[in-house]
Image (cartoon, rainbow, N blue to C red):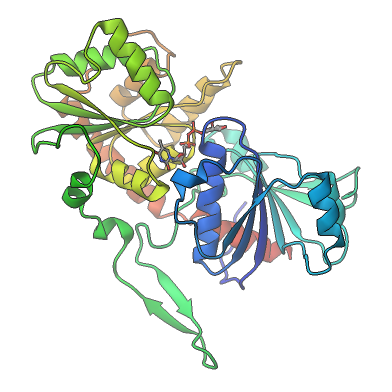
Length: 395
Ligand code: TRH
């Protein structure tokens, strides 16, 4: 299914997010909220656990207000508040069920466009299901329609989140008070303005980075191949710096170094440095600054694609092993080189070791693929633009 992208009026959005685990649910929702706000929309984010925003988005964002997931008491007072209006668009992220009392409010007055934002996948069902309607058959919103919006890697899907000024010179439409809209084009993108050396120098690291160190970021769950990676890097002939993200990666590295009887700061030419929690903006900077990125889940994968650098994806593991097909669909959709697929197979436990060498030659070889993939995806319309067009069609 293909949607046009007409310019859209400023809308009011209610976006609902439940944090199931880790950081991706909130990470994706916040990126969407920030992208919409940057385009002039007013966004209310309803989330059951907003605590991670303290580091993900410490400065907040103009145009977004964050609200606790409304319980019965909160819903009662909203229902009695004559100034409260449901947004033009209501997004339930990743199938989180909207509170019934909120659905009841939605069913009164002008009906909002109700969108279920799904998880990202390259599997075939995504294009088949993207944009489908789901009539609501029961409950207070009976008679309304919910629309399924699937992010994806091809033009027949909902695309990938990419805010306007990330890689493309943005075209902003401004309306001076009392005047007619005019179009202003700025030529600098966030990535082109990035000062790598200055940013790295500002990181609170245990040891300054040397010019000859290969920089590798690590954001993963608990890959069985992690000790193999550390051993390999410590025995390599060239120096490497592993920049380890907070949380599960830090704990996984601690367990791996202990099992290897290696210092927590590394061995040989490998130096391991711990990172603090970074804001999403600085997390992007980390990916742009490194020669190779280990990412996981959903949002960091997309940001690694936009970084245009080679990366390895630790896919979110599922009990029924559904992630095996999901990983292979991703590799096929993006024409991943065979040796990088092999690396992914071992990193994700689809095959047992040894982990292929993360050598300078391998990284250089995968670099071309990372750049081509970035350019290829950049040619496609981004998720927020597609969502705005979709909403405009349904209103
Ligand atoms: O944390 P993740 O593994 O998240 C998810 C969730 O587990 C979700 O339930 C699951 O379905 C999904 O994966 C597939 O990985 P992800 O998606 O990359 O989210 C991490 C977010 O945290 C991302 O927005 C980047 C952000 N982040 C920072 O902003 N600063 C940091 O320092 C770190 C480590 C992450």
